[in-house]
Amino acid sequence: MRSVVPVWILTILAVAAVGVFVTPGEFLVFMPVVLGLALLVTFGVQLLVRERKGFVNRVSASVGGAVVILALATVVLGPLAFAAGAKL
Image (tube, rainbow, N blue to C red; front, side, top):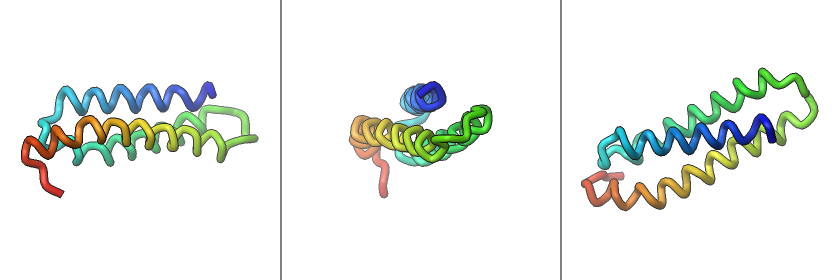
């Protein structure tokens, strides 16, 4: 879990940054960007871990948690984006 939780924390911070610094109409544009960054950070962290056993489990937990965090953020920020005039 030492290599999984930092990815989740960075994802939460990135979602908060999107909520604060991005205009509401573009909230949904930046969610896939945050997911891509979470994926890159996941692989970067896993390269730093010397343990080979459990690599797939750690990557799955990191990315899966990031997806759950982004889904919750979309539930919150999505209606705000559509109220601001965002289109699919």
